[in-house]
View 1: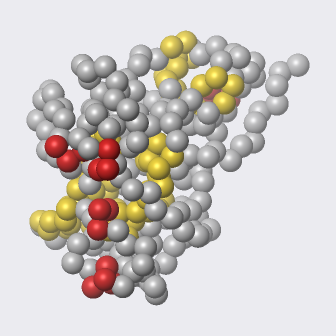
View 2: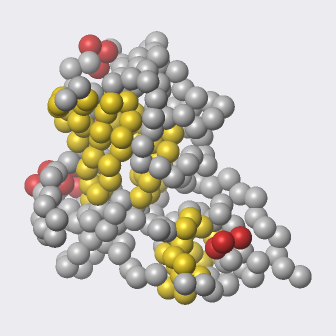
Length: 246
């Protein structure tokens, strides 16, 4: 008898440099020392699992595009890193019923992410900020927050950390944000971004980690939740565990 389909709540959260196409990513001096790893911060009361996979969060407000890279301690970009963003809307309210201004994405083969959203509104007790969880494939989750420079409440918010300030600019009626994450992960061999292993054929009784890719019936899937595969849990049958790529 086939195994029952799992009903799971994923523990996933599940991001700034310009680069010409084909350009090799060089180590940046801003992430060469261990103390420069991105600091963790409180999750807060409004995180929800199971956010949709998307890189655009739509709604009323001033458009904001945040981009950057996810690095390890050796300043190597991390491919397939998972980032889960959530924030308040233009009025300072969180959607705790649906998934407005909530979404997760993966870094590309160069370790780069790009989020299109709005500038979040203010609410009592906090300065302006965006929440995020970042996780390299098969590694612990970093929970932190991103902040805006020049905000008056930065001086009174006890959670605020200047190390988490984005670089912000304005152009054409929208704002551009830049931030690079440095995870507490040792560097691997040089020669390319970490986490870029080629997909393998899906098999039962294998421990799959978040971010790993497999091929099943000529279709590629990315693991969304660490699990041991079983007969009956083939990727197209369990979208909780696998996300189709492409």
